[in-house]
Amino acid sequence: VMMGKAPREGYVKTRLHPPLQQSQCVEIHCANVLTTIKRIENLFQQTQEEFPALQMRFCLAVPEEDLTHSFFLKIQQQFQHTLPFTMVKQGFGTLGDRLAFVFQKLWKPREAIIFIGTDSPTVPYNIWRQAVQALSHVDVVFGPSFDGGYYLVGLREQQLIFENIPWSHQDTL
Figure 1 (cartoon, rainbow, N blue to C red):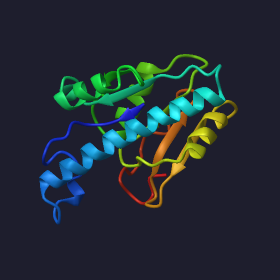
Figure 2 (cartoon, rainbow, N blue to C red):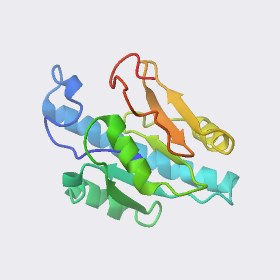
Figure 3 (cartoon, helix red, strand yellow):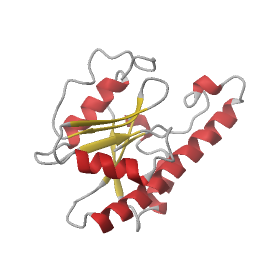
């Protein structure tokens, strides 16, 4: 599941403005989303080759008002043959609230869900592979980031790990 939001000025990459113009923030966001989806497309292909029995699907979770945004509809059309995906709403609240909402909506017994954002478009295949492998015998995996948070979280079952978290903070993880 990729957590995303529509490219709107004043809505994406807000910590980069200033010094960047809001239009530049939107451009960076669009590039990150597209690069991340292309990366996921490649990761899926490699994973299917290495783990042919593994059932995988891609989902884009966005705020409800973004479900019909032209940016996402174009992306869905662009990848319809190589990485078909569904879009679901994220719900409301903190990032933790939204992650928990999407997990509850999509999870099925004996399945794992890996969440990734749009700020890490170059996650190496080896990291993805390790997360997939680890979820066969552990309940939670993280891809820790240098700023104290994480760029990837995988879950095999419902956890309370998204509650009471200082989001966007050096102590998030």
